[in-house]
Each structure stands twice: as C-alpha cells, then as structure tokens.
Image 1 (cartoon, helix red, strand yellow):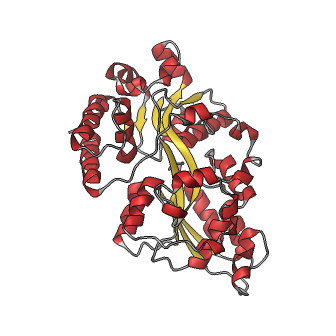
Image 2 (tube, rainbow, N blue to C red):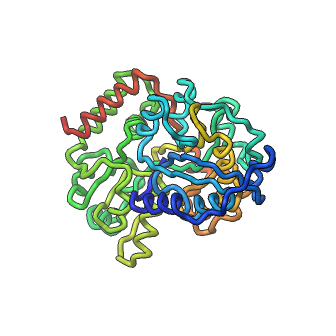
Image 3 (tube, rainbow, N blue to C red):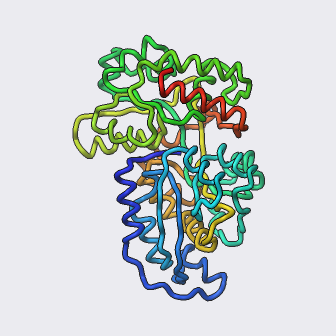
Length: 385
C-alpha cells in the first residue's frame, strides 16, 4: 500500500522504458520462457504493462528484468487502491500486472476481474512464508489469484523536534490520542498535518480507536468514525497519499498518518540531505492496520506469459531483498530475509516484534453499500462540509 514520491516514480518509469535491453531472442518452450525470471539466460522478448504503487520498487529492478528477458516494460504508478480498482472494474485496464491491497483484492476477486494463477509458472512461490500465505488465504482462498509483494503497517510518522517542542517529549506518539483528540492535533496545525487519502484505512483506524470493530459494516458504527474524523478536520493541512514523503523529509510536515515504509523513506532522505530533520514512526498501543500489497494478473491481460516471468523474477530472493532495501517495506520471501540490510530487518518500525504484531488488525472486504458510505464520509471530510 503503500507510497512513494512521484518524481522518483517517474524516474523509475523512464528507466523502465529507456533502460538498455539486449535484443530479444525467441522463446524455446515453456521452461525456457520462464527460465530467465528464475536466473537463467533465456529471452523471449515482447511487452509487459505494470500498474504499481509509486516509489515502490528498486531503481534497478525493472531495467535488470528487461535486460535479462528482452521484455519491454511499461511501468505506470497510482497512489490509491481506489484508482486501480476503478480501472479494473471498468474493464480493458490495459495492464498485465496490478498491485492492489489485500482487502481490495478480495472484493475484486469476487467481481471476477483476475485470472487464477498457473502456479507451475511461478516456481519461486516456494520462497514465500507459509504463515503469511495462510493469513492472505483468508481473502484469497488457496492463494489462487495473487502473490504478496510487500506488506507493512499504517501508523503515525512524526517530526521528533517539532513534536517535542509542542508536547515536551515524544511520549504522546504512542497513542492515537495524538491524532484523534482535537486539543492535541490543533497544536500541530501550523507545522503541517497530512492524512492518507484512503477512507478504507482511515475510517477503520478511527473505529478501532473508539473501541469498535474496525471492520464494522453497521452504518451507525461507521457514522461514529465519521463524526470523530470531522472533529479534527480543521487541523488537517493535506489529505494526500503520495506527497508526504518529500514534505516530511524537507521538514514542512510534522505529522502524518501514513504507511510505515514511507515514513522510513522520509527519515532516510532527511538523513541523506543532512538537513537536521529527524523522524520517528509509531505503531500505537491501541493497535494499527497490517496490510499486504498483492501481485495479480487481470483477466484481460494481453501479455500473460511475461506477467508470470516478472512475478517469478520479483520472488527471487536477491531481487526481493533489493526491493525491500530500497523502499523500506518488508516482503514475505523467507529466503530474502537474510539478504536484507540488517539496519532494515532489525528495525522494529519495519519488521515489528511478535508482541506488536499481536495488536495489528487486517482489513475486511468492503461490500458496495459500505464503500458508498465510506466515499460519502470521505468526500465530506475532504471538502470540510
């Protein structure tokens, strides 16, 4: 789910489109057609159209795949699940691989927009964590339609110095009280407050804070979450899902309800810039969302074999580790874990402890009537009406 500065994404896209590629050679049988993705030398050429979250892949991943496979990749980006879902449900998406979050994937499966996977074409599935696959199977039974790409949490990203100046310490960041009590959030309005532009996450977070079922489908319960969000609307500077990494890194945003890896990226960029901006990330004591972003092949995909080649390539341990090292989001690839930078795999904000994971909740599939209520609530929140 998560995100990822658009300027960098464009650079990645340009690399994907323009990176040097070997001349494509004809495929020679099914095994050869997927051989390069698993580390072989076979090349089949052709095209591949990918639709992924912005800032969500290492700079070398797409160019290296192109060189190994001879496949020309068109790599487009989005910054919300709603964007990719609208394309899928409209039909003729034009993409061969899309990356929805698990709860959206679940209802898209119900809508019949994906092809079931031919697992014989993805031998690197053997690298995936069985426990995580069981959890994913609750919404993708038998892991029939999708493969996990990255996972993470949604929590509070904060500017250490500005939070300390406002509250005397950063202790307040351990609770959603910082976000949902107007007397707290009002102290941060001048230094910049950003929420993700995704009602499917923010409304459940509000409900969980209120002690309600975060996945409640009761309209009256959802209204409670909406009412809470309205009380803090005056103190929001921005509702956006792809601009806050840069604004945090530059010090122009002091608090974000955002995705774990994005906050880590902002922290790292500020450190690289040596601008004195310091960040923290909190998975609050009340609990927070755990999500999975999934690789799936739309039913109308035109380049299915190349989609399998790319998915299998992404599941190579070194490729998966390189992506995690670049975007600061963990993956479900057991063989990749030992290859991940120890500063990342040992960071509890990226790889939470078992104690913290016990407090995390996942999102349920949202039925259409609940989705409509979410959309109305969010439109009112964004417009201030």
